[in-house]
Image 1 (spheres, rainbow, N blue to C red):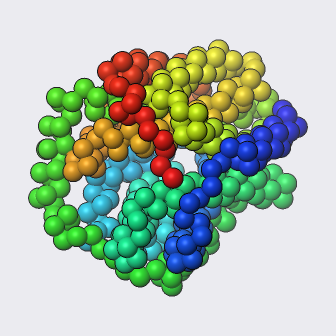
Image 2 (cartoon, rainbow, N blue to C red):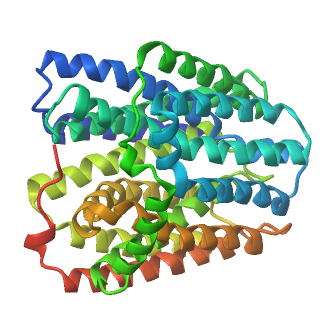
Length: 439
């Protein structure tokens, strides 16, 4: 299994590089020197933060087991992180707009680094607190960084609005590359150098301290418009967002697909380690994680080519993605006990499908969700997402494992997402919702 996982990573890397060179479209604004200079101010800092974030991913579950906690206890730790993120998600824009995006990013980097240092403790309470801080920092940090960029791009430099997509596409590419490197490096320090599962989280801490220093040194402060940061306006926006959902079938369907798919993804983030790494199979988790990230990047590249160049309808691609994900999890539930490499292959396929899903869902939200209520609508659909993922982990992942049951639930959720996608595809006209992905 160890050799097979390493060979899979090499094969996927070769395939992804070939697809990128063959299928990726050129960047129209790449020759603008002022814009490139601005990107160099933002993208490297963002990628340093992502490195600190990704380093923790491969060995977090194993770290908790290293301290002797059972599956149901580990599930509670993860759920605390999910609930912490959900609690602060509705207020993230108000907090960063009032405090300032630069200050918010700095504080969140420091909180994130502190949560990494807490993994040195074997105390259950300290680990739960660290996970809560991680959820809080993660929620505020990346949205604040993106808000800082958009404001600087639009107001300070007055670049064309469509150029923001160029930067975020490069960030997506860079994020995948950093995630792949972080997974391999986590394996090096944990397995090859034999520092154990605590090492990646411990190394993430100075990376995040460095990110805080870079934000302070390189970025200037910016704030949200005063009229947009009132708590009264936020409550009014939530009420209007809920009112906008009820009469709009397309909006409800897209929001439901988002909740169902991303619930499954949250559960997947938790379950992939116990699904692969058992007493009988010592899997290189960092290499497996890197393979997942390669598949995600490959999905992004293929999705862009299918929708933009070939002209496939986004609604049809989304329909295939949800249906295929349901089949993948059904097969994974069947193979959970006896066929580990088949399980690994199926989880890779799900990550590939995630690479298709996210760019399509981003565009559909922009087209279907009214701009004035978009944030509050997304907040409303995060409620069932948080509830379903938390209940799935707490109720199904017990001391006996529960991996097949959780994978079966994922198959059911993706089956429901497929039905919503089918209804949405029938209710919409392709020529109205299927233009090319933005450059």
